[in-house]
Image (cartoon, rainbow, N blue to C red):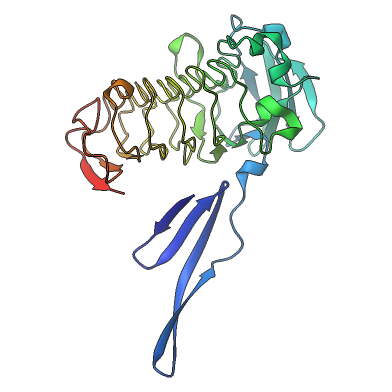
Length: 323
């Protein structure tokens, strides 16, 4: 849960993907002041309850190509289902040639695992070597723009995604939005309300290059909530996201080797990072803030006193604040 107290004593907190706002009211009774906090209205939408969803922000009769890399493991075994505007679910074998056509501004495409068996029942998943199972799947070959939101876990657990977890495999969400041949994905604008699981598999490179080269991405997910990290879990996750200004909150208290390396490399507009690790590990931070904005704000754990300066730590021109 994240708690924010503003100068005018409006309290905001985020829990379970839902944001609540409480505003302070002061009243006097016989000369004694009392404080009461009232909700500003009903809470905002809980995106953790939603299927993984792509919403078209513009376009007319647009096509969304699901460019899953043809050299990914288990190609014939990846079964995905999608539904447009809460319509009938359509099941397809995920390949590098699936296209969803006739899309217009405001259309919402929900996605879920569509196989008969769970993702973990697949032999290529159980051997832990499912290299980029969704490699570049949602890279968004369209001349239009979209945002993505909802629960990432519906891609792996179908209708039973609530309170589920990621499969215990390497690179399980690797390169999800990354384009072919390192070219830019200039369609994805926002992933602010994309909900990540609270845990991650103890395997390698879970979210490797997930948003790499998404040059139009202005809003990253609010938080990457896992408190226990895997080796290389966020390696190159946002590298090349040149429109991104604010990093997701990184609440994990303990780092892991290679966990953050190259994470924001080349994010030339990035000017805000909040990392709550109690100790900085040099083995986790190689080039993680290379080629970011020269001026910014870095919020750190007050107990963390060993942060290095520069691209492998805190950029030298940034203001440092303790959380």
